[in-house]
View 1: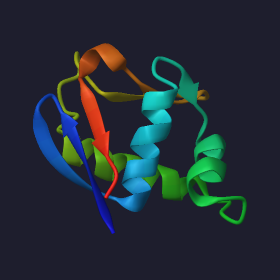
View 2: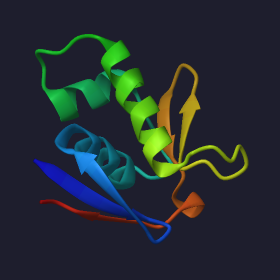
View 3: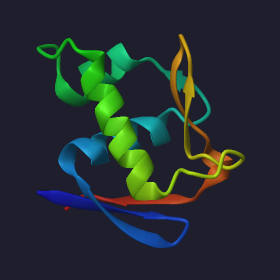
View 4: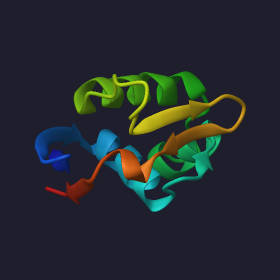
Length: 96
């Protein structure tokens, strides 16, 4: 199953996990979301490795073109978690 997002007017196909990750970030815009919170909310309590979160965040960054250092949609707050920077992009989510 795939879902989609519009990021700055560009259509992006997302897997179910990617969609859940983006949704969590949009729901907590501007605030850091610790990796262990993302694990619990997106994958459930049976998953314990933060490397899974890192890998999926990396995939998302590539898909959304998160390369401009001055205008990143998802940033890393070392020791705090990942932050969705709402002014950086307009995101519209559509679940399939």
